[in-house]
Image (cartoon, rainbow, N blue to C red):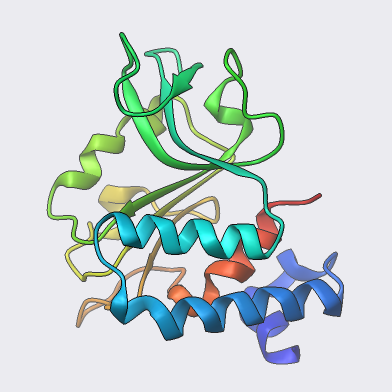
Length: 180
């Protein structure tokens, strides 16, 4: 557990060893199953990890141009964007996305990460781009920060990310940022 605390730094001070162990176990589970995941299975596996760790979330959350939640699913009328996974309590219609953690799941990216440009205008508490590939944007273009992260198990050869998280770290990141 000390290694995990050292890797994350000061953000982890308020988390008990019990919670840290749950995070670690969730991370190991993600790593072990990542090779069998693709497409919607990728999202479902992330959702399963959240469920196993009692982290509340909703999938396929539709927002309007102001970042307000207007429904659930991909066919919500007049929606601006549908978010893969939103983490937090009371994810209800009318709430603003800036009150929550957002997980954007993409098996490959290329320029598809630009679909989430809404996150610059209406920044969530934490935005995590999850990908199974190394075609993610450079940190400067992505505007990487401690609350805007890229998580991948396939880092670029010249990986310039400041926060070099992989799927082993996902459970830890979630519980560090989600406080019950």
